[in-house]
Image (cartoon, rainbow, N blue to C red; front, side, top):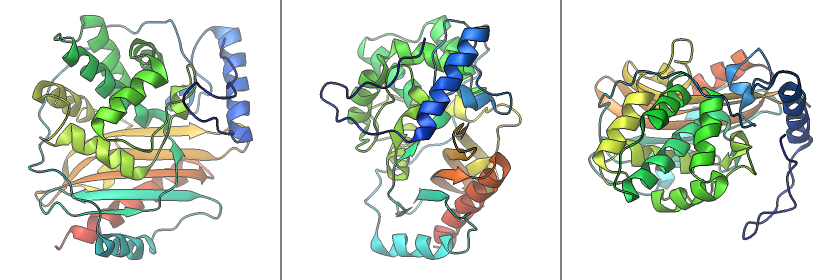
Length: 316
C-alpha cells in the first residue's frame, strides 16, 4: 500500500501538499488494490509516477552512445541573459492558471539564463536524477551496474517505465539517497518525494540545468563512463516520447520528459529536460510547467518555451 504523507521527515521541513496530491495517491491505492500494477491512468504511461512496484521488467538491451560533452563549468546566469529570456518568453502562450519556468545554457559561450524560480513536481524527469544517484553509489563502491540494474535503468529512462523507477528509487535509498547525490551534484533546491512517491519530488528549472551540466559536462561528480552511459540512454528515448525540448533542436537531442495528470483538477504537469543541437551549436534546456488544461496543450507550450530559450543565444 502507498502510505500517506507524514507530517515531516526527520531533518527535512514538512510542507503542505495541494489537494491534487491526495487525490492522486487515492487513485493509486485503488489501482494497486485492483490490479497490483503501477498504472494510474491509461492516458499516459508516466501517470504512475507516484508509486512503487515489485514487478520486474524484462531485460532491455543497452546501447551506449556519446551524445556530446561540455568544455567548461557553467557561470551563474547573467542579468542580461535573464532579461533576454524573459523577453523571449513573452511570445509564448501560457494558459491562464498555468505556470512555466525555463533554464538554458549555451554550451559554446558558457552563458546561461533562467526564467521563473518556482518549484514543480518532477513527474518522470526525476528518473535522470535517480540513475545519477545509482551511478554515484556504484562509482563509490568501485563497481559497475549489475545486469538487473542496467535493465531497470534502460527501461526507466528510455521507456519511462515506472516499475523500474520504483525499483531503483528503493535501491538508492529513496529521498535520502537522492538528496545525498544531489548535494554532490550541486542541486540546491530539489526535495525528494516522500516514501515511494518519487514522482512528487520537487525541483526548479535552475536545479535541473545543474543536473544536465553534470551529465553533459566534463567537470562532474560522475565519472566519464557514468556520463556516457546516461547520455546514451537519454539519446535513445522511445518513439512517441521524443517531444519537449527536442523540438528546439535540429539534431543530437538527448532528453527525458515527464507528464502527470492531476486527479483533483484534471490539469497536467508537463516537464522536459535535455541537450539539443541547433546549427552545430549545443544547448542544455530545462522546461517545467504545471496547470496545463491538457497533455497536448502542455507539450505545445513546453516546446515553444524551449524554442524561445534557444533563441536567446542562437545569434550570440
